[in-house]
Image (tube, rainbow, N blue to C red; front, top):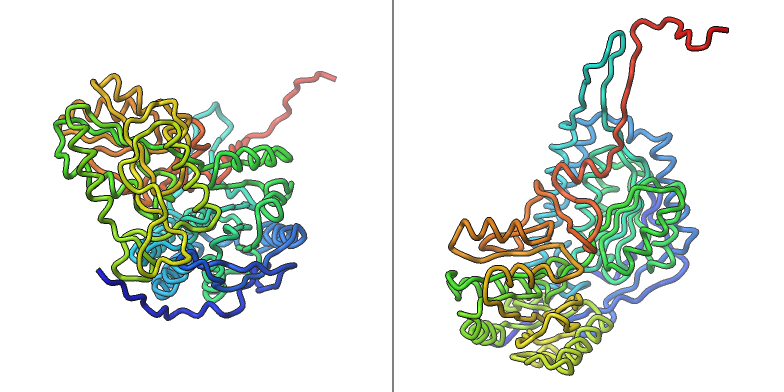
Length: 500
């Protein structure tokens, strides 16, 4: 099928600045952003220094300690979040196009992310007025209650694969609870988040409540994590960086939420329809070119259907339309950067050397309109062993490994043979077995006969080295609050503990 590139209706040749204390400001340097679809310069953005991070933290600190947001009523905070959601909807096509041009994902995926981001703000707008406390029966004359209060200044560091959605996941609950924020988007994909800052400014969010600082992690991210003026840090990204963030947070024992890596299994039993299982397997690994923390990157297949499954999946993977995200025919776009492109190709070479069987892909994707872009063909390895690096390590690209099992016990063992525990799925028509196996999988997000579907109402996070804490749902709001016990003595009299 011939591909015709759409002409983007979004202007990127403009000023892209940081947002600190209600003002758009320049930084100390300029970064060129590369369009992953063709490897050419897309635009330039301002980047900050440690001093800019400090100014953003001070602005957030003042906005929390002295500003109106913390004392704004829950209903008024909710009204503001509803306005933000409406603004995202009004500008959804522009925001989606920015993410496609900046990060490479197909426009259909970016559009879905924008709708989901708006709904996240609406969900927490509705939840803002719902937190409830407790009253506790204690001996008279005391009256005791338990309430939730905002934590304070929240540092938020988000990844490059879902910039707008990750911004929503962190900002919405933090703002609903009454906190102020300093956010650092990825230096690779900041455009939609900068545009979000402009929308926050338009709806009249008070100065200093949300601050957007641009730059690399060591330059501006680490100062946020280390600052004693920051009360909480929320991070989504790699395990390696997550450990650095956790260590930095020890300066003042700030609250920490980490959503880290994954090597998630999809367990397929022989009683399940092979064609449907293959369809979900393709969806599980090749969305956003596999650059998804919860990607189904390990497929654990019953030996009775293994050969049929492998053959059908390889046949379909070869037909996936790879191309620029702005093309309407594109089903899978490029990787986000040259560094990520090289990393994925290096892992493919590792898999070959380890002795895994390469069924398809394994090379740069070739074709019209792919010149200069960071395209890797959909790749499948079979005949793998559990100790192989491609089985154990997160590749974060369009590469999947297939493992074989003979019985349920072995399937569970293979599924759990990982340092990660973010997600997992089981495919079977036996509901009793489905319930048994999905409970045995050591992961925070699981599916039966499906994959990738999740909802703002449900918690997101993992076991083991996939992170600490949960985002979304009521758990996401709780993560941005402190619990306070209040005791009131209704009849104060002398205690007379000391007689003299």
